[in-house]
Amino acid sequence: MNQADNLDAQSNTKNTAIDTAGNVRRGEELDLQKLNPWLVEQLGDVSGIPEVTQYSGGASNWTYCLVYPEKEVILRRAPKGTKAKGAHDMGREYRLQKALKPVYPYVPEMLAHSDDDSLIGSEFYVMEKFTGLIPRKNLPRGVSLDKAQTRELCLKALDSLIELHQVDYKAANLEHLGKGVGYTQRQIEGWTARYSKAKTWNVPKAKYVMNWLRNNIPANEHICITHNDFRFDNLVLDAEQPTNILGVLDWELATLGDPLMDLGNSLAYWVEAGDDRIAKGTRRQPTHLDGMLTRQEVIDYYLQKTGFKVDDFTFYEVYGLFRLAAIAQQIYYRYHHKQTDNPAFKNIWFFVHYLLWRCKKAIKRGQS
Image (cartoon, rainbow, N blue to C red; front, side, top):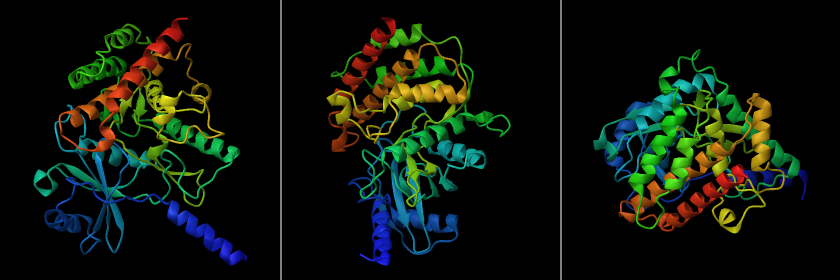
């Protein structure tokens, strides 16, 4: 193979690795007859009827890619069915990202928003599409990183979270993003209520974990902008240099909160190489790769870079796991009550059991 052929092969590999959407799921189609005239008017620089595909990633809001001759855009809308209070608020998600964009470059540009249910049956917004790689359960096909590159990607991901936490939200006039002080207490009370409301017959009441969290809220609380769903599969990587991060997606849960709780949320998804079979079976990001930091190394790196002093991270670890259990149960509740027929949600109740077991295990480890 000559040099030109080799460059073509590398280019083809990068093109096939770029994240793309798939077929729209049955029952989740967009009504283009109503939607498209509105989009053409709002965007101003598109024409014709777009090709619509849907992203399979994510178990909450529905995300579509609309391809016009001129450009591609992303549309996000809430799912059908009963929604938890405060969840799936497309207007809030749109306004938050629009306000954050000037001070945090990883946020996509917001293009349009509508709360007119007559268009697609839900509030929605449209945003810029980042074209790049998304590391889901595994790195994209054709993308291979050695140990040093994997570590570089891991550290840059953590640095982008730290950069978010260090945004001066007051100077940027972003104090309206959340209530701030008292966040920790509100989160424990909120996720406890959400779990209890979404409980089905086949999952535990989780009273032990709920009570432990209530009784172990840290005395000190820091307030900053938090993402609250910061994972590798919410990052867009540069196709030319996969260790570089182009964007951070899914800002549904972002607010003014505690950065250590945000880190605890991320670690709940962090499956490392030495974890048990159940954890490995539920892995949805490539944190198991050689070169990735372990959960403890992530904590140590974060604390060293930020200067925070924490004697015991157990509260934040348990909070992250319990919150994930509540999120999973809310998703399963919709499946259990036939508000969605997505087969991926059928056995989430088992994952809820596992996460609560992990909570208890962490609590006992912290007490020893």
